[in-house]
Structures are given as structure tokens and as C-alpha cells.
Image 1 (cartoon, rainbow, N blue to C red):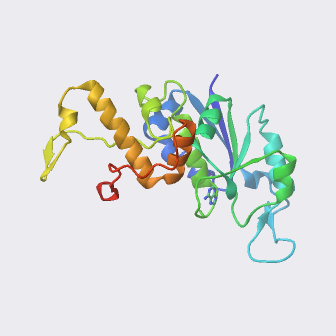
Image 2 (image 1 turned 45 degrees about the horizontal axis):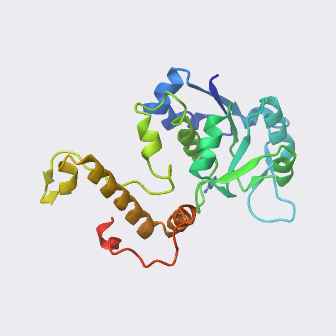
Length: 248
Ligand code: ADE
């Protein structure tokens, strides 16, 4: 069954955008996933096809009307697919969410503009609110592209080498180790000797340590969760390997 993405937006021209290129673009051509775009304006009211109105209680900006948004959601026959509303008010999107969404039948993504969407339609249609980070975008479209990209690349057959999906950052709760390629010496900087040694077990150990160090220094939140999950004491001092100056 094709993984099915439906996007409800006032700016359908923003899609597929970057998702029409590279891995996601090829997978779209190969029908490993489908993209159904719905212009929210088509569900607008009256001669002007109005989709928004002023907020009750006053204040700046406009709010998308619940009746318009509900008509669009109900028209797309979500059919078991979750309806996702990207918003900075949402729960943070994590790789485990991406795995869950990618493993299901697909998603319906509701893109908001203006100040947002009337809260009642989010409740009535059991919409999942998701944030892609603690910053504010001018609308949900860019976040929808991010969400879809993260899901599509996990669809079986989309990535060239399946190993790269399992090994990368977050799959085990750690950041990835650093990568190097030719030339072995470049502008006075040498690739770490161990990577040229051919000792696979030693290389694997080095990479694990590098992953742990990067996580410890850059993402103490992930490091604490990793230590809890792997049952290690959290009161350990920072490892001497964790020299922040080595990480850029
Ligand atoms: N819409 C606007 N900002 C957003 C964010 N940070 N995450 C998800 N959707 C958004």
C-alpha cells in the first residue's frame, strides 16, 4: 500500500517543493508515496472564499475558521490516517513519532497561516499538534515539508542503503559519529588514524565513543535520557574525552 500524504494548505504551490527532488522526489515518481494537495481556499465561504476571521477577545492577526477547516478535513477521508497540525504550540516532533507515522498508512497535514486555527476544530477532529522546534515559522508549510521528508525517507525502498537508516543519529538515542572521506590529509588536517587502520572492532569502538562524546557535550538532554535507558549512573563526571573544543 502506498504511503499517502494529504496536505491542506492555502499555498499549494509550496508543494512538492524540495520533496520533488532527490530521494523523496524519486520515491514520489516511483509511487512509493503519494501527495494529495488540497487548497483550503476551495472550502472558503462566500464570494471571497473566506477562510479566516478576527479573533474573539481581540488582538492582532486573523484566525482560520473552524467550519472551513473541518470541511476540508472531513472531505479528505483521513481513513485511519492521523491529522497533524504543525504549530509551535505542539509537542516536539521526535524520531520515534516519525517512525510511528512512517509505519502507518500516511498522514493528513493541516497547514495554518495567520495567527492559527480555531481551537475547537482541533479538538473536534482529534488533530495532533506537533512542533518542529522552538522558533516561529510564518506558516505550517515548511514544517509540513520537514515532517513529510522525515517520514518518506523511512518508507522501505526509499533510501539507497537501508543500513544508513538504522545507524544514524537518534536511532539509538545518540548523535552520529563524525564522517571522513578522501583525501586522508586535507589543508593540514588528517583523518583520525584509527579509521585507516582496517581494525573494524576498534573502529566501531571509536565511533561509539565519538557518538557518546558528541551527545554528552552538545545534547545533555539526550545524554541523560540515554544514560537512564542504558541504566548507567547519571552522577558520573563528564568524560575526559568530552572536550567541547573538539566539536564544531
Ligand atoms: N508553524 C510555525 N512555526 C512552527 C514550528 N516551529 N513548528 C511547527 N509548525 C510551525
